[in-house]
Image 1: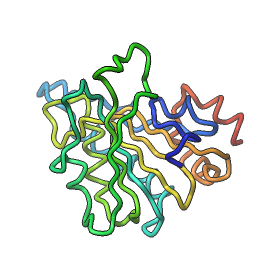
Image 2: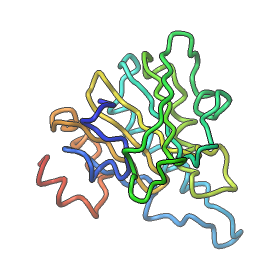
Image 3: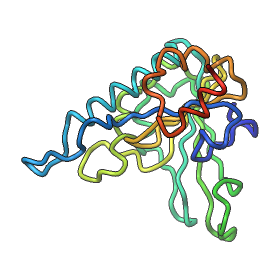
Length: 208
């Protein structure tokens, strides 16, 4: 699932054979509190619970998974062992860690002499071995520098057991995709109310 069949490039939903796109940040709530002119914590709490609910419906604790985390590099920026992503694992003792450079994604205008995408793929793990809640919180905080934790990169959760890939891109939404319709059918039914209205018509044509 992390090979050429599913290209790990945003927007995942539009670049995959089959997919679901969910609204994470609640449209009925404001991001900012008018009274205090501060961020509305309830908005972020709801977003996190929505993301967790979708994840828990798609991933089981004993599923075989991999995590791909990638950042853009000008040739100097690297993924370091003290990076946030590594701290979210309960243990990496039995995990396989692969560092790689990629110039085949977001390649328009890429300077091949120095620029690339740095990726670390951590595999050989189970769902229960990673702190998903903290990882999702960091992804939701992406566009709000005053909030912690921060992810500062793209994270793809690859479920080898269920044959699907999940990407929570920020507080606005989450994509869950696959190379076939079957792995997504149950999720389409259970979380239909969270499907992003903008893409609902095209999704319904495939899954309803």
